[in-house]
Length: 325
Image (cartoon, rainbow, N blue to C red; front, side, top):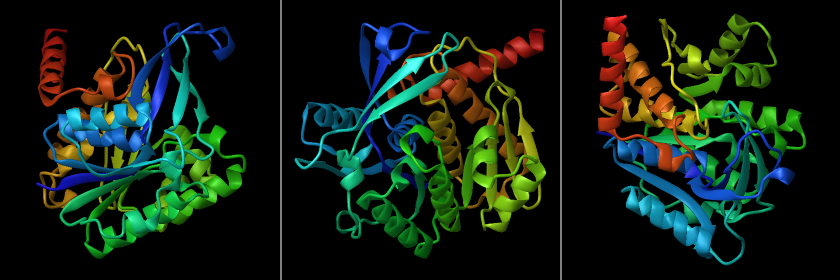
């Protein structure tokens, strides 16, 4: 079995106790561990797939809490650094009545952003799937560290997964942000995007044109997530769609990370995605849809990520309902 390695931000999400209010009107927040690349590692670990997180937090109480959280979930933290030169990143999340989110980040720069190449250039990446997100690609040392890791993963013929996970509020120049994302497509095998992200990244309104453009950049597998409508998987030979699950949504934080973490954990058991039958791919998509759906029924990101047993029970329950209807 391959292991999942991710690099990037590990931060504190402050989740409001009340939905549908603006930041200025919220009285209290709940502290939750988060950060998309870290969420992916925890999801993989909770699904019994070895995972390793590479990153940096502050030498502060928040950093201690985050490191211990990953340890508690059996994530390898041997290259999770703590620094006195910057604080741990914080994100304040506002929730609509439907559970959709908006973010205010406190970084500028934070500990994760000043992780540098010298801290990662000796890390063993053999027999791994490497995952990263676009929040790591702003103009700080972390971007160069990510690029160095990508080059080394390419040399080792590892699959590389990229979830842009757009946060437009963090990048003043959206044109530069889009160009940086395109630049990093050169390293990408698996790309996961939402409908909106597909349009922003490709600057094409027609989905067919957008898809063709992304494949022209060299990606091998494209995953388009469509919320409650499910997910579409595309490679050079096939297009497959799997419907989503209907659940009562509490908080969508971490749902996309749960999805890609579950997807990667399943393909880690196989030599090649190309060798999987359509039925096998559809089963993996269904498994990832289930993991993400469960995540939306709870508050927070890491604390909401399901175990293998939870996903199995959820699928069994929904299959039973389908047969009864």
